[in-house]
Length: 338
Ligand code: MG
Image 1 (tube, helix red, strand yellow):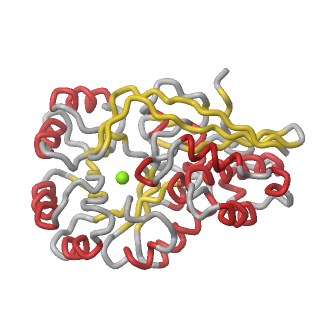
Image 2 (cartoon, rainbow, N blue to C red):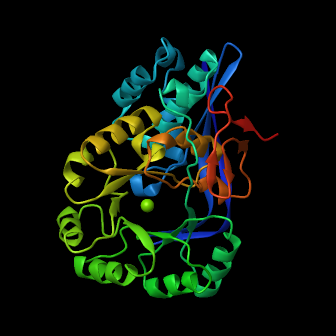
């Protein structure tokens, strides 16, 4: 058993701006596990919001002893082993966990969703994300996304209303709004959500900074629109705290440390009465396809990271006009683009 990794730079079709950052490329780490003629693929898309970058991912991966880690190969045991190395580095752990699932499912000749005891997702649609931009660019991005039935609009800066007006000047399709912690007071958040409530907006994600739980609780008592936690959910331990303030959670394999942990978080969230969105970072088809294997568990899907880039190094899950379509090949069902 060998672990090999390489850094790959994903190039975005458009400058990707959210309330706290703007990017044109996203460095990711592709991990491969090689064993007895089979290869398992994984990916880390480290995010500075969660204290990671490619350097920290590489350092963590260098500390893994593949021989010790891998046999008997079991995602729960691998998770414990990685946790014992450090309590942090969620995307680095996700990369290893995804590769372990790919390899194990390939050994058994079954898709990862079957390995996880899940159904193949049927007729599930992802939103398509429109980053913050000038009204003119927003209009052209929305027109470019004409085939995608649901849009996720990034907000949380001055000019939020202009963004929505630009979107609404070209389409009336349902919107999901993500403020990425950008509204700083509960009064500001209330005003924005009230304004959005007659704009055919399905939900609002992370309206205020993650630590302002009491403010979100106050807000939720005053609005009907579902409020979803993203940055406020970083581990299974957060569920207990956030379940009284939010209607749902955005779970991401990259911030929760892999498929095994993400499935546990989804189960806990549901037990606490929370709805579930499966979301993503900017990731190639390795990470996005991995997350798609959990899609049958979700109320909402936001898995579009791989269609926002121009140089995806893998083929995997297909996004057919927003519909998530997995193939039935063993493992993740992905192949490197040669
Ligand atoms: Mg979000």
